[in-house]
Image (cartoon, rainbow, N blue to C red; front, side, top):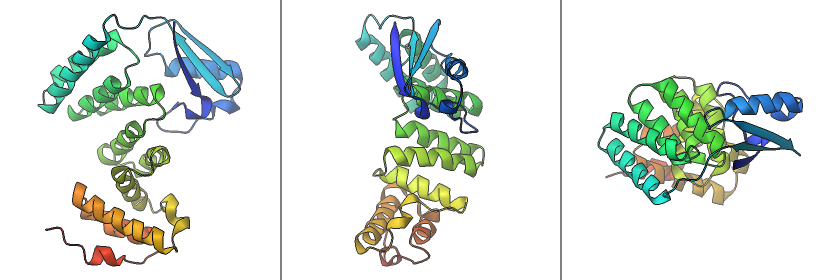
Length: 242
């Protein structure tokens, strides 16, 4: 048997709404979790104890893990060349060997997005998030799906917040999050820190770094100004990108 142990409050149940599994009767919560992990080979067993779920399913580890990783690398190369059909086929082969391969599921979701199959992309990204709820990149990708593909910035903010909570030091996550929350008119969580010289300087430097590395000037100035309660940082005013 294979086992996956996850805190109930970390399980992504619904992409559209928050679901409090701890508020449900145990049998109901077990049923919900079983449906969430139905992409894993049956039969499933779900045990809940002290706010933690253990999901078990039948299956053996890959006979040759190196071959599985080689296959995954080939899929990534196909995607890098823009051959998403071959990437999807190869990633499915990886998942046949190892259904809980998080990166394969995440990359499968990304490949479907590139092919314009947004719902399939969301489905596989959600599965990746359920397998690895501590992976900020999967939540960032989900946020981008709602923001860029579906124009639902309110739902996007939920996943930007999740990614930021998992890794608040990543400049790309920080930039994406602040851009997302500014669109819906809320403020980033570091607002309470504004007022100290050190935090003000760090915000300026983070914005400058984002501009240089990711070429995302559009909106960043306003975002940082929003975080600073309307004040335009001097570093942005004098920033030269040439």
